[in-house]
Each structure stands twice: as structure tokens, then as C-alpha cells.
Image 1 (cartoon, rainbow, N blue to C red):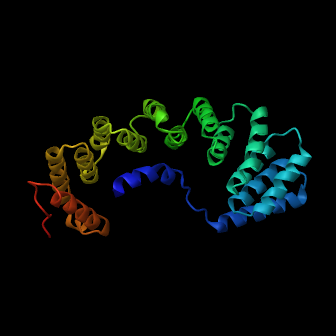
Image 2 (tube, helix red, strand yellow; image 1 turned 90 degrees about the vertical axis):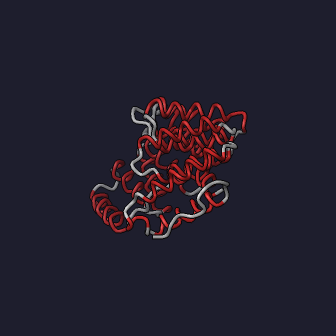
Image 3 (cartoon, rainbow, N blue to C red; image 1 turned 180 degrees about the vertical axis):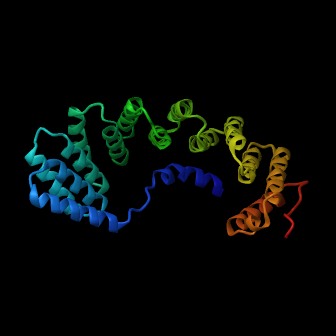
Length: 283
């Protein structure tokens, strides 16, 4: 089912960063380079340019800047953080883990340091250790982000079904701190479905429905959960409610490509169940 595959990809989608325009980065690198020509041993400037080069994927230039900063200020932990970020971007997980571990030995309460190390450990198949660092970052942060809770739940669940309850509890911790954020609830729904907790999944979906202005897609998903839970009559009711929400939309929205796809999906759901209208009317 496309929906459930989509739910499984949700945490990855949440972590995807927008592409950065090269023009502004190039301009900033040029400006910092001009300043460094006057103060070539300025460690903060080297760190700044190293970070800009990293963002611009100028790996060798970034490495040179961070290494020079480290040589000039061996007691400063910031070059280690830059080297850790850089190595993680390049997929050099052993180097990333080493640099970030050394950084955290000096700056043990650094939120980003724990997050970066946790991500390196996840990618290096060390999920159990990663969970510890995700939890540490969440405990230290005054403004934790929903995706951090989702990343931790992925690390927990990647260790097997025996950690599913732990992963759900971690997401609920996020809900308790941040409120019923839809992304947290959707990640929890995916785990509830994994253990066939259909009623719990419905309760979570209903919190999203209650706060959504546009309800047609959530009603469709509600029908899917009911159908998978062996409640076809209630699924028909949910699908029909989705149809009514669709038909209440302005025609320009109904005729958009996204909503035409939605209508085809809903038609297929209705046609597959008994005692339900088989298609939506064409307008």
C-alpha cells in the first residue's frame, strides 16, 4: 500500500535539507577569504570559511581550513566539530565518530555534537549507542525538534520488534513536550500499524483530523486503517466522508493533478468494498 510505504519514508523526508544556492555561498566564501588575507591565522574566520566550504561541498578546501584551525588552536574543540560534520557529510563514518567523540569529551553538553555522533553511529550500524546520544541531545535541548524524536525512534526500532514499545514511548515523549505534532503522530501511526494496534492508530489519526482544515486525505487514511483492522463497514463510512470533503472543495482544487490522483485512489477504495458508491461523480 502506497500510504504505508509513504509513512515508512516520512522520517527520511523530514530529515531532507533544502538545497542551498551556490551564489550566496560563493560570495560569502570570497568575503571571508578576503578577510583571511589580512588575518591568515584568525581561527574563527578559518572555521567560518571551512563551514561555508563544507556547505558548498568543497570537501578538500573545508578539510584544509578545519585542519589549519586545529593546528593553530589545539585546545579549541570547534575544529573537531567541523571535522566531524565534514566527515559525516562525506560518509567517512569512522573519522566522523572519532572527531565527534573527541569533541564531546571536551564539550559534553553540546546538543549538535550528540546529534551528529548519533547519526554517524546509526549509519555505522551501531543503533544502540546512537539512541544514547539522541536521548542526551533531547535532554539537553531547550527547543528539541520533532525529527530528532523520529530519528531516535528509528534507531530504537531498527534493533528489532522488541524495541517497538520503546520507540513508541519515545515518540509520545515528543508529543508530551511539543504537542500533537502531525509528523510525530504519523511516525507513531506507522509503528502502531506494525504491531496491528489499529485502535491506537485511529486515535492518533483523529488528533490530526481534529486540527486539520483539509480533512479529505486524513479521512481516506482513516478508512484504510479501518479496512486493515477488519472493519469494512466503518471503512466505507470513512471513505464516503472523504468523498464528501472532496466534493466540498472548490472546483479548481478538485481538478488539480494532486486531487485527481486522490479521487482515483478513493474511487479504487470504494469500488473494492461492498455496499458503497463505486466512483465519484465527474464534474
